[in-house]
Structure formats: C-alpha cells, structure tokens
Length: 280
Ligand code: KIV
Image (cartoon, rainbow, N blue to C red; front, top):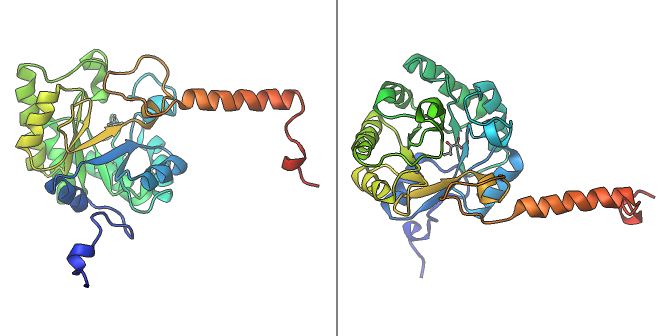
C-alpha cells in the first residue's frame, strides 16, 4: 500500500529550517516542543541533533559567556558573532536572536534597525524582546517588516534594576491580570510566540489557554506549549543556587573539572603526551 504524501510527511522538516509556521502547527496539534539557549557552533549542533527545535542566542550570554552579573551590558555587537556561530552550527533549528537592553527601547525605528542586523548580519530567523503593551509598537513594526518576533513576559531580566533582582516570581495576584493583557497585546501586535519566565503555573496555564500563539515556559509550569532553559543551567555548569525551575540533566561541572584536572596531572608527570598522541 502506498501512503499518501500527507501521511508520510514528517512532522518536523529535516531538509530545511523550521519556521514559525512549523512551531505553530506543532502547538496546534498539541505537540510540546523544546528550545534551549546556545552561544556557539558546537552546542547548537548538538542541540539540534538531540531534537531541540528552536535555539535562542540570548543575552544571558552576559552571564554565561562574559561573566557579568546581569544582562545589561550585552550589546548587538556582542550577540551578532554568536548568532552567526549558532546559524553555522545548525541546519534545521529556528534561530532566535535576543534584542539586548538599549537596542529597541527607543522606539520602533531603533528596534527595526537592530532586528534587521540580526537577520542580515547574524543570519537569525527571528528576534526576541522583553516587555508587554509598552513595546507593542516595536513588535508591530517588526512584524509588518516580515520579521518574526518572540515576546518575553514575567521575569524580564533586562528590567533587573526596577524588579530588584531576578529571582522573584512575577505575576502573582493582580499582576497576573496585567500579564495576561500584555500577552494579548503582544499577540495582537503580531508576535509569533511568548516566553513566560518565573510565573505561577496557574498563570502559565491561563495565558496558554487565552492566546493562540505558543507560550514558551521557563519557570512557568507544565502547561506551556514549549519549554526553554539556559543550557549551562541544564547541564550543571552554572555555579551556586539555581532557581527552583531549573532541572540539572547532567553534571558537566564535575565531568569537565575532572577532565581538566587529569590533563594537568598527566602533563605534570609526563604521561601526556604519550606515543599514541605523538607524531613519529
Ligand atoms: O537571554 C536568555 O537566555 C533568555 C532566556 C532566559 C529565556 O531570555
């Protein structure tokens, strides 16, 4: 029996990049999908081969790559080479580039100029910015220009100086209503998905129900359409106490720490390089 092309077509493309329509289609058929941050070619390729559908080149690189305590110092010029690296390391994953603090707050014109840089210079397929109703004009301008926009609500790390830290759960009580209105405003302005960070699971569920575009949770409970984590958190590389929502899927801190220590001791006692690792 020959199956019709519709029945044989894989749900996710294998010969081209995933688009925002593929993400929406997965959400519409009730399939949850995964997203991770990456800032380099090698981890991006690994993630894609593991089934990660979208990769965020996030301004968390301010902490994970550049050693800052928050995301404020990150610029477009920091992010663009990382976006290029992630694009080079992937073939099918949708690459989303963060618009960093100061790159879109001045208005739609500034947002458009920087989003265009991410697509033209970086090779990204989409951009992400933080905020709700107050940035709807920026979102509308980008969407009108054909640039897919991901929103980000709840804990928005670029607002660290008004939030008073980035560990607080957002959207409790009346703030939940405001967050829902912000989500509706972003959807109406043309966003294709919304990250919900550090909000109660009930609010994550409510927003997911009320909007059609996918919600991407990070500390927003199990009901979101997709989930995202910062890869170093998931891999056990981030030192110190992590937020409750982070699940450690590996202990790379230990694995790599031991590898580096073995290298040092083998160099010190002459066991490395041995004949097997030397040219004759
Ligand atoms: O920059 C980033 O990595 C993010 C995630 C935490 C969602 O915005």
